[in-house]
Length: 550
Image 1 (cartoon, rainbow, N blue to C red):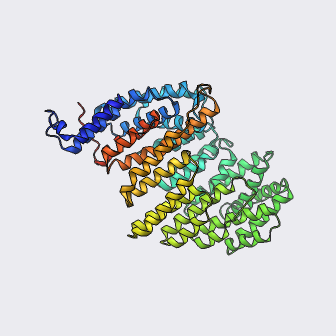
Image 2 (image 1 turned 135 degrees about the vertical axis):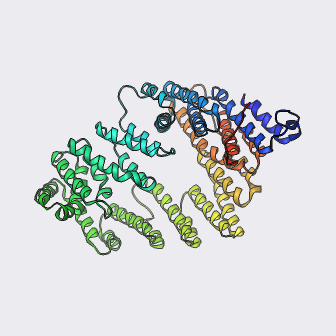
Image 3 (image 1 turned 180 degrees about the vertical axis):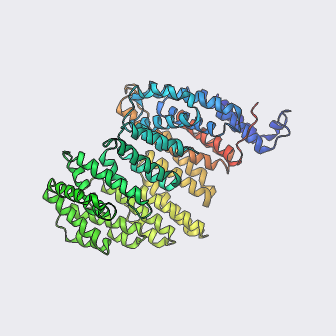
């Protein structure tokens, strides 16, 4: 069992003379012994998984353990067999406990499992039908494709899956633009061919790809780097699709279509496909006739901004001239984002509104200020970073910004200011309300201390563990699929997401101490996550995940 493996690990590390008495290991170097002990811990985990209480944490750990073993199947012959078995167990666990796993994690687990199986164990792919049923869930194909981009050599398979999904008429929702954006950044060699395939699919059968999706991806086609023939194909496809969808009752779609036609597409058609211009112009006028006066005013405002030689300044002028507070706030927030994208950080900081009627505004503002702080550090301006962080209302968001500032000072050799930033962040974390967010902030702080003041690491991790051990478990009166149980599972999963990499990092400095900290976690499920992180950290730190397990 896992506990026996852990005890063996600790005893072997504390008293190396005992290991030396074993004839089979007496000539092995200490790092090889550490790797063998780590593999022992990993191979004990499947037994421990069966004892874990929360299906969300079981699936979380099974997926990561299977992924790790698949990644290193060439270094350890037994790894692939064990990974395949874990994948099947994960499949059964997800099916059996669908109603107990929080929806966000359920969708993520299902998507990740499908991506991993298709990449590493295609012979098991047929079993996935049992998980999804006979009809594919809307967007599922594109979610799986997006996850495939996380895996090495997964881009080609991901592109094929997206093409297949679009060709079969599945609606990608917002996922198509996210997929293309990531492809552009990480796998640009696949982008142009997929853009051509998308046009071919729509040209063969108009309406196969939703017009909303076509309009969302406009920037990938109408830019200076795009081939002329591809731009012509795109504007022709959009006009034809809009004509077919002209009677749509979706006012938001009508507004998006009119904005795209009047601000971008119409001028491109005049340049590239003049024979299509009259039809496109007529379509734009008819779209305008279907829009309310307020929407037209907004479009006129947007047109003035787009036609200005200084769009950012014009946006600020329009915001200050508006009598509608919500429009003013939205324009200023957008102007702040544009300023940030142009690296005009001080202006971005001055522009961001202090308040808004939007209930989600505070979350956005805190994150935006944190982004300004991080960008200021990239520009080697720690004073501006500190100024931005001081305006963050959320204590934990501010602590996270200060943590980054501390790491910046450490990088440039100013240990005193680095420690000042971390200690201020530590105070903010200590004052925060107990919960998963506070645990995660403490774990992030421990990783920062690992680089700047390693002596503080055990106490910081211990502080996080203390909060974990205070987490109240729902009683037996709460059914497994109740909202209280799901909320509890979601909190544990949020912690697990951060706990694994932190233990993976700190074990490289102190094996015995790290496993000791892990063993202090009272919740069996999270203890297994921490031990998994520590064991994989040992294997990864050697730079050669190799083992000759006996």
